Image (tube, rainbow, N blue to C red):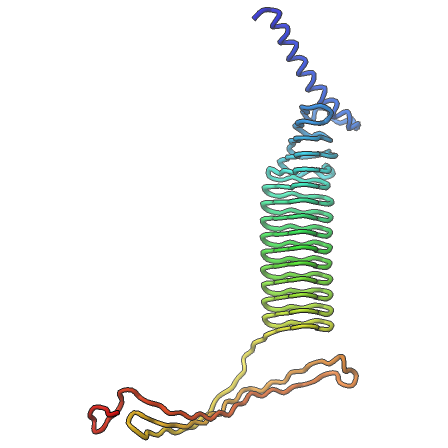
Length: 340
């Protein structure tokens, strides 16, 4: 290689190094708070391109171990761990956790092998191997292997292997392997392996393996393996394996089944007569008795004239049975073969 070519190549390398270094310095200078200007290696122009490290604002691909001063990332923000306290920023695009990540607010797609957290609001699609959570409202499609929750309202489709919940209202579809609950109203479809409930009104279709409850009114279809209840009125269909009850008026169908042991017995007498070979006729009388039961029903609509109604249930049964029987291959005449 000639000396001239060597000098040209060296100049190109120095220029490239100066370009990368100047971009990293310019990115940190925009922060304006005097922090270390070597916390990220930025390959791009005007904050667009590839950033490796703890850059403040970036558009494109941003790779960092753990955010401590992020303001905004547009594009892909991939981290190994969740942000430090006060270090989360806005992410518009893909927040990728390898295995965990986080943001102050996220609009787009959130994916975490372990999970991700959002301090304020989340809008988009979230998938977490273990769990996800938000301090504010969460909107979109959210799927978590174990659990998911939001401090505010939840709208869309929420599915969690163990449980899901929120401090506000639910609008949409919520499925929890064990439980699903909200502090406010529930509107939509909610299914839980053990129990589902809302602190406010419940409207839609709700199914709880053990029970389903509403702190307010209940409208729609509610099914609980053991029981269904509402603190207010109920309209629609209520089905509880053991019981169903409401604190107010019930309009529709309410079903509750209860079981308990009751003692009883049977006494009988009868006679049977053989009137022809292999033929008999008989009559029998049986008396079946069982412990009686008293049930008290409240009648608030007729108060103060009538406050309760008591019913006495007796299940004693007198039964008379008549029968004619034929016996195959039985007795014959004089011990010989049977004649027909």
